[in-house]
Image (cartoon, rainbow over all chains, first blue to last red; front, side, top):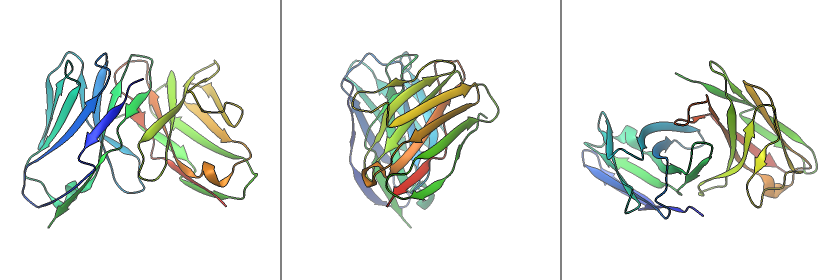
Length: 112
Length: 115
């Protein structure tokens, strides 16, 4: 059974810092990996999706990498801003017909 | 972009009542919809996979008679929590896929509180 772990569980940093959020998964036979953002009491916003054949994806200040063989992904946030404060979730898809397996998330606070 | 809506966004009910949550794909046809549940400070857990016109597939540990799923059309899936109890209080989120294997589009979620 796939398990997804996110480290750290919580992170608080001053504005402007570059951050790395970590995600690991136990079964490397994934179809894709996605990073989401969740604001308190809200649904999910998809940030980046990396196919299993890809190594990384970039969108603005966000860069996600994938090392499928080692079961790891990182989300890099450059020049963090208070508006980046949210919970960041990592999720993997095991196959085309499958639902996603989520980690517990990293609760991020960017201090003004 | 693809939009998925959920209704209601929040519901409070008494223990023993049944609650229906709707998930709609607004601008695409969803061949597959998924239902997730999220308890406070926990990750989203897949409850069931719903394919239009067929019975839902439930994850281990999810009672199919308690969580009734109906995917009656390509744009609507419903989750009915039957005889709800306080331990069913949670955040329920649906997602929909348009046939391509890549992306699931998530709804805004429904917060259920059972008193």
